[in-house]
Length: 367
Image (cartoon, rainbow, N blue to C red; front, side, top):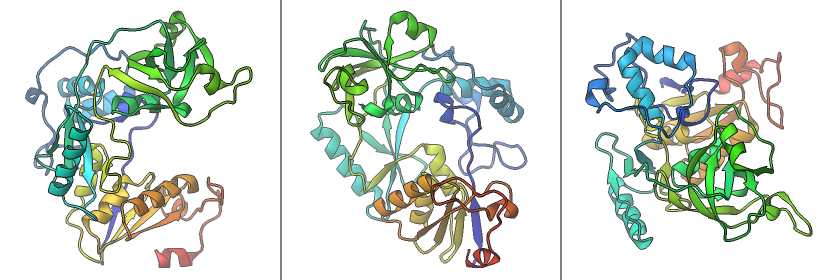
């Protein structure tokens, strides 16, 4: 049977809002036409000034790459979009266990039970995707008492999540349970020491961005330790209230039936469709497993082999495959960066890579 290979790699060297890529790369001839999922041109979007939500400058190499293929006008439009969260929360239907219509009905029932104003809709192009419109930016007043969270936590909050203790970087002095706090996310490239006592001038110097307000569930002393207080390293720390960009919190909602996934990641799997029965699909950079499990669902009779160089991250693929009933996924911990000579280097038991030790030839036969 044919072997289909998938490798999706984001632009290196940058985290934060620019990690959510709004543009799919053009085809091999550099054209943006003739694609199953065409890229909208700048003229298809309303012109607007760059939002003030973030003034972070994108990496020069990213701008040059986009301008090379799309031209400067369309690149400016892309950067406008990338400076805010996606306008849609997208959810992939786990077709191993349910259909799009069944999930749509169940999800909207859940949203109504939560007295939410949000409504899920089927995506007009991707057949196994649902969407929920994100609202904002909303005007939210900044408060004198504040908390600072890391970039990963900030991205999750902008997509509807609450704040948990591991994502907290710093808090104002004497934050107590029940206090209303302003939530800021640290800017890429800045690093405050864990547990720093926040002051307004310090937040400005760090280039922190206000993303909303919430209520403290944990006190400062319980997060960072204090007199006669046991430190809490996990658990809900701040329950969000007012959000500058609002989307529903879907934590543990119909978790086995849907998967929160960005639309470009879904399109990446559909780009291989139709996958013939009996095909072997090699995902060479698989963790945390979103595309891997999607490929498995698109063709349950295919065999999907997921590689990752980190055993810790590969465990996330296995956990997600079990959760989504992707029984046709198998995993192998190995690097797959630059061809067969690197493909054969295997991970040590604790993760990482064994350099200079090629795998035995039998492994290639088994693959």
